[in-house]
Image 1: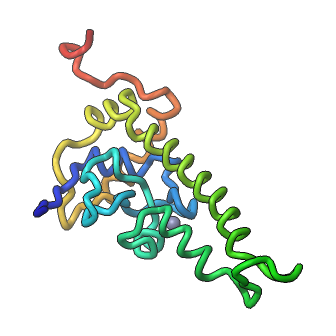
Image 2: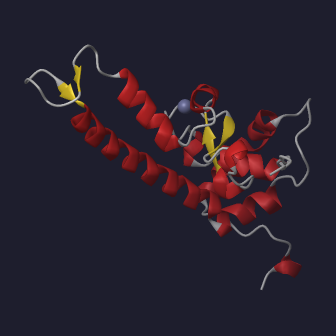
Length: 174
Ligand SMILES: [Zn+2]
């Protein structure tokens, strides 16, 4: 399948980057970019419903993996500290089964977080605010997403507190 990635408009960048209180869904650090939850190369949608706010380090670390694979590979491959065993063979050993079960709970927690952030990004009232109150054109090399994020920071904060008031032109309201 030969797909072309699309560019994202300023309102789309702002709508995603400021979700989750402007924090990375994976590590809770400040968000800096958008992550395709299911990677574009693997057939993930190039759409807001597949994008979450992340920091650059997590974006790089996750690479083309799904969040589930990423978490499992980090935990199941790197956290044995010399005590890894196939089965529980003595009290000090950590078995693959036990490790898998602990990762499973973490994975479900992460998926819940992703659901929550996806619902925030999909919220029609919030989305409509970004469409009408920010810009419909694209960021350019001189004015990237972070420029507009700073420009709109105060207005976004106020609108959030006010419950995303309707900014559509009155002719479009019913
Ligand atoms: Zn992060």
